[in-house]
Structures are given as C-alpha cells and as structure tokens.
Length: 151
Image (cartoon, rainbow, N blue to C red; front, side):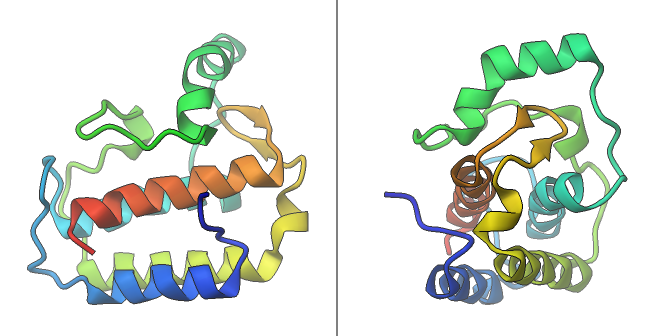
C-alpha cells in the first residue's frame, strides 16, 4: 500500500529522507544531479499550486488522460529512465538549498491542506482526480526520485 502525503507520519518520513540529501549526493541512475531532481519533483507541486505551467490543449489532455494518467496515478512504481514531460525536464543548474526548501514547504502545505482539499480537484494534465489519485501522483513521484538518490 502506498504511503500518504496526507498523513503526518508519512510526510515526516519523506522530509527525513529529503533532509538526508546533500549537494554532493549522486544519483544511482539517470542524468539529473540532486539539485535538478529536487527542482524536477517541485514541478508536480507547481502545477497544483501555481499558474507557472500552462494547461495543455484539449487534444494533448485527451492523449494524457488516455495513455499517461494510469501510469502516473496508478499503483505500479515508475520504471527507471522513463521519458518525462517537457515541463519536468530541468536542464539548467539549480540551487540545492532553494529547491530543497521549496520541496519541504510543498510537502508541508499539502499535508496542511489535507485530503479533502484534493477530492475532485482538477489536474492540469489529467482533469479531475480523486484525493487518492493526487496522493499517488505526489507520493509515487517523490518516492521514485528519493530512491534514485539513495534515500
């Protein structure tokens, strides 16, 4: 069973894992450095909480809902080195402390808002999601990348 971004104990565990990272932590696979990974994981939260990322057009949303949604919000873990959406590609250098602080704040904010806030809330890419789908979206992605960096 997947852990929950709406459960204080699970969030404390995620934050402890994030806090084990250092600017020198190397990835076990993939191309991103640790600062880029933190920025990459922040994108999911940016899409939920900010207007930084545009909503895909209707055709792209149809394709995402038909072919990508179940991978993102379904129970199967992500495979290593899976291609990612353009908005999630972080090619430039990022400041480790800034990205880490943002991620910790996003995890706290999500916990504070709680499960009820996300029930039926619309995702930019996938339309309306249940709170459980939002949980999988946030938790599975972050867990995948924390594993990538050995924490």
